[in-house]
Length: 622
Ligand code: M6R
Image (cartoon, rainbow, N blue to C red; front, side, top):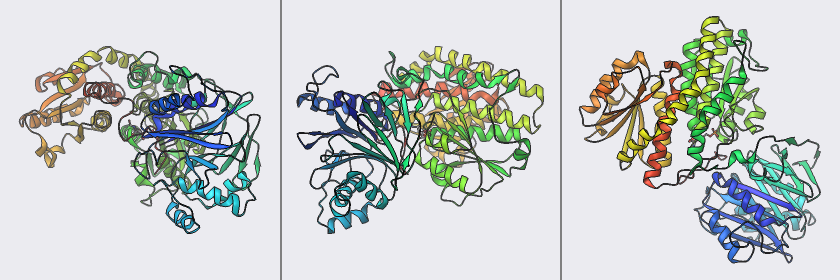
């Protein structure tokens, strides 16, 4: 949902901005731009399209030299950059950021949504300001300029503060002003922002990897805070102007983890990392036959007293929650409600201090999820979060955070994060059910052992990926693909279907196996492809009937099943086998062939696998 980056220091700013923007491109790639001060003027270079186009423009204009990241000239030591995921106004050169104020002496990059921009735009128009874009962001540039001259005595810090006090909505902002050629201002509310602290140089960015090759000392910016950066100094203030002291954190993971490492796509690299990611999520939490969740806040009494458990998340994380519902209900015998975060918040949910809420988010910054979590917290619920990005908003605000050890996930399509979210759901379910005495010590240990076997099973699936590739090569022209399953296979089908549609643009639906005949089976015709995960032994007979129903109407069926399920080959046109996994744990293994299928379909169709159209990795607008 847009990425921002800023640099002030001794080095040449433009290569650093471009490199930072490339790292943030996963957040949006409709357009990009940079701004810097040169000869007392703000220079803005921006363009619709990918960052490569911006880079070519900067090279053509002589700001970067051909063929590498080195600068052609070296008098630019401060600048801001932006990569856009369009919200207000179509992707176009005019709507690209940075946006200039009326007199061109202030400019702004922004990630988020200014909710009262229509009122502000009207107010500023009445005062004589003109708008050249359709964006909500342009009002911010004009509003800062207005305060600069009207009531802030040409003090840029005071002007930004005054503007922010009038703005409603979410923002991560970067601001430059020609009257302060050595100073950059940034601010945050409900959109991620970090500050990188270097030696005679400082950075701002929407995420840590964007600046990790320059510094490992990171200051996390909280909501309603403003930062004033020069090359020698970083000062953090509240929006009311009170100075805040906060120590930076040291990041010890590597920027290489966020690079492709020889793979053609991040998505393939990230699927290949699934065994390691699951192992790193599970193994450190299993000690001497026990699941160790350090400082887990819920006692057996609190779990027993819980009226219900709500799982709240979006997209793939929501689908991990759907698996969690089956597992927790089965093992803990507590009702579980799974909610899409954007719906939860507005339906006056039945949540109070006897509710446990589990929040799932890879990024930890998804605004719908964050807002839902705050809503649940305000109603007194205990918040357990499952998050991948360390230090993200959700991880900081939840009562308890269980980190998934997936490492950076760059491809827009979430893969290894899902496997690790499931690993955490299993750990949580096993631990809670054991705590309240719903499973025996022996079952508790057996489940742990089974969880430890999962990485090897995923490895085996990855080794057989050519079978999935061949299948995709035969079906990538499909117009529509259905996924059907029962129980946990239905929960898995939803994720498989989402993965396929988001990166291959093929229409797809996921249905419970028994529900198709209540309407949707009307869409099945000769040649329609139906994919059936068949991992739930107890539901096999029923699924076989449902497969017969679609085949009788001409469907071609791909079954995904365990090695021991020999009956699948009798009813399916083709079968992909995964290792024999306990049915309760099956989704964490069976998702991998589904992800591989989506991947190869996308590759064969010639789609942009890692950056599918209309999407962004981190959705920080509601
Ligand atoms: O960062 P989050 O896990 O909160 O993101 C939630 C969804 O936006 C995300 O899972 C999305 O659905 C992915 N693109 C799916 O591959």
